[in-house]
Image (cartoon, rainbow over all chains, first blue to last red):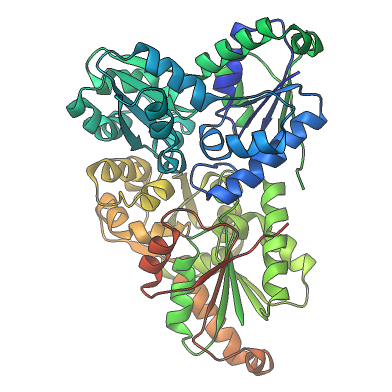
Length: 263
Length: 263
């Protein structure tokens, strides 16, 4: 199966893109809802959790891993590759940035994410490595996640908050914005309106799905090992209030979720 | 020592009240920052965490336990008493409600808290038990916690959000409001302004400190077992970005925090 993990529910926006792009493959999803969110935790703790999440997916039949969580992608991807050298591991950060580099014309790219993601500086470092002329502007927007989860996205308070967060980008005239948090694609319309000008808005979930697709076309031996089925498996470490409702809204389909403990 | 635990940093508002009321006693604090917040998790998960937190404090010298977390108080207090029958266990929910019952004149009491706290209906049930004529109005205000943690309390967006949450209370003309979440005392001024009329605003941290004080006066044998020292001990399961800053702001003193793992 294609294994996908996230700190919680948000990674379902990535799962949705993978199901859309690769409808024939069975996926196994794990959301660490008992310890969500990762975005305000330390690097060491996030690495520990990401290793546990990956182990769970591999033990349950995943042949390739997609890190859907931007925070885990930013701070734990290289640790995971060291820990599991034989497993193809994809992450949303790299996929989103490759696309950003390709589409920016004025070489001014904005990145929004959680505090841990932005603080890691992984995005700046990676973009500078592929094109040293790109100017990267980052902004931590921690309130967007709870606003999305509360379904407050269309309220005037949210519009004001998003506008406040994006103000520096308007001034810098970026032409490309990377949504470096799984929840943000759900707020895409509010973000678009707050930016005011027409710019490229990149959903890294969409890009990682394309990357996996290309990889499977080039690696038929691994491709053959993947199960073909639409019976996707969803696991979480906690089933909180409103979980089912929110998940099905993101995936636009009924799902059966099983709760497991990582201890 | 007096043991205090919370899902994270917020319980320091309770620790502050206990240190103020009982300055001679040494406290040991545990904040479960690696799994924070509890307020959006399931009852089963919160009970499991609360038992682990209590065990840690008892193993490290706590002789009495104060549950500073409203969510854990609401959903796990009775389980903890069953699990640790010989330990005096106090909780912020009961302390706050006893005070509310005593001060309300029109018998209309408002409760604000996290989704898990409000959903538990513990407040309504308890207040009805001590006075069946009291009308209880509840409102889950999940966005106040991230707004406080982001230090956005004095921003106009926050004022609007708080006003929106408290609107039903203004209509019902409550005369008493219980701040049933550890973060809310830090937003007291914004809450006061949003209510508009002069009402009783109850900080359960203050009330639980009084309750512990009274208990120790009536139980000299237990009182003698408590260490007398100002060298309080602070433990957390993760030290995230800005933790030190936020903690010291709440406690109004420099502290040394040690990170431990509950696994």
